[in-house]
Length: 300
Image (cartoon, rainbow, N blue to C red; front, side):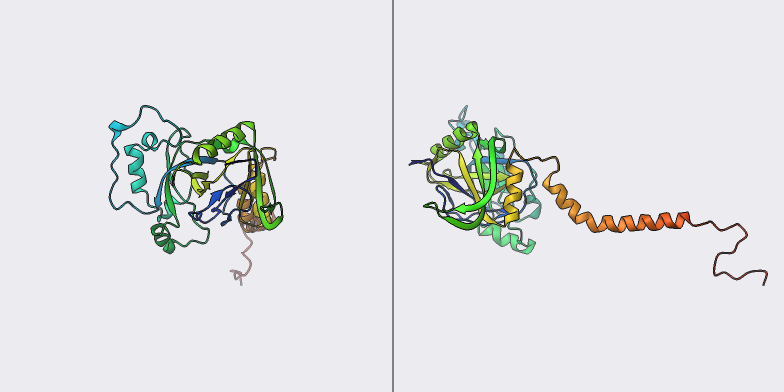
């Protein structure tokens, strides 16, 4: 099926939370999930899913026969090519119940497979991670090469969702439009993934090295328009849209304002301390023979 309707990218984890297994990309009005936790990074990628599983250590290592690996990939979804023995070992040994594997910031080479975890919910406690990983609520992935990246976004705006049939909903979303290259790339990705069997009919939306959603494709998207949806507040949606929109002035990164806000109290205390120090230094110094105030006069 081909459609020029707005694609709905169900995002779990830009503010946290892995996506449900039945999340799909199609027309507006598809299921929503949780919103994003952080929007201060600059790396947004769309990669095909090659393999996925619960985010725990593999019970037994998988065996990959390198001798049958093809000389070149038939497509970005060619698991036989991209999943080498080294990639499979990294996947088997990745433990997404460990907080250090859930902080992001590690970005893979765009032309190679990439192994990573879901971004956890912002309210997930360390004591909950083992259960979340074991049940697959935090999954791990082998992703293929980057097929569309954030640089292909031509415009992004925040607004209220549009439901199937054109009615207005109540949730805040981010509407994204790809440039001409991104539109062609996104159409080609959706067309290729549509007939594939799970999990290879899915693509991972990767923000700052962690999967924020891995929806499946249920339609070929031709117009390059996507709606990134979740449990966004108005400020969340506007911040994310501003971050994604190349037309927005970004001389001061979003994270800088967050950092400055958290340091505000410290700065105030520091300024007060400096003022007090200056006042002390400007006091008239005592003469060498003048006793310090409060000490007895030896002559009495």
